[in-house]
Image (cartoon, rainbow, N blue to C red; front, side, top):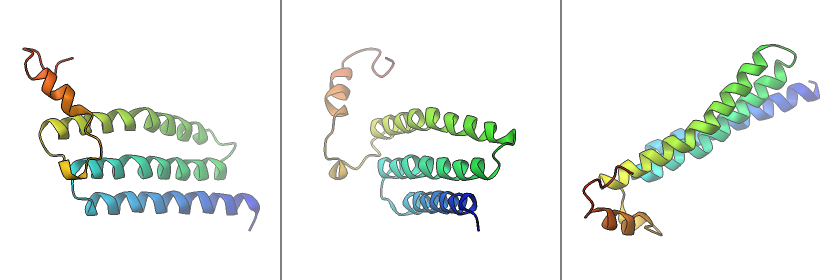
Length: 121
């Protein structure tokens, strides 16, 4: 087994393990905010590791560029989606207050309650 094959195997297996932990977190965590955290952080890193392993294995192929584009797209969209899902869960009251260490949105939500266009900023 060459060094390249070993590195590829480590990256793919490590990425797969992170994706597995994300899936377990989606099932096991109690509320939307915790699930959202589990669905974004380890899943994105796991995907990047798998894509890196595949790109190393297919080096010199035109398909490696598609892996790079996929990784960039994931890095750009995952945080935005997570932030929007978190805001929506908070506004709908699906966040467990006992699990929040700091509630930074409470003051803003209370301040927006009196405005006629609240939530449309």
